[in-house]
Each structure stands twice: as structure tokens, then as C-alpha cells.
Length: 83
Image (cartoon, rainbow, N blue to C red; front, top):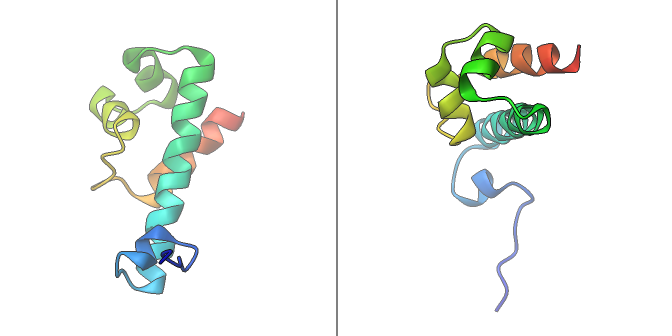
């Protein structure tokens, strides 16, 4: 029997609809930031300087450890990457 998804893995894991949407947004934003870093071939130090954030934050984003990183923080980083 195949598992039927609700379209959001976090909802499937039991998170509320709102919390699942927030988590999915964080994952998507972090992915965009990681892709930018990869495309630009930046080291963590260079990425931290570019985004004006501490290097450990870059490390956490690259390893998908997003606890303690807000959606707003990631949005700001993505906007910087777009400019």
C-alpha cells in the first residue's frame, strides 16, 4: 500500500498546518541560500562576509540545521543574493 502525502512532509509528520508551512518555507529559503553559495563557489568565510552574518550561521544553513534561524533572517539573506 502506497503512502498518500498531504503535499507537505512536515504535515505528514504531524505538525500543524501553520507550523508545517513555516518549516517548509524555512527549508526552501535555506535551499536558495545554499544554491547561491554553491553557484558563487563561496567558502563559508566568504559567504559570511557577503551576507554580513557570523560564519557559524552559514555552516548551520549549509547543513540544514535551521533551529534558531528565523524565516526573516533567511529572507534577508535571499534578498541579498538576488541583488
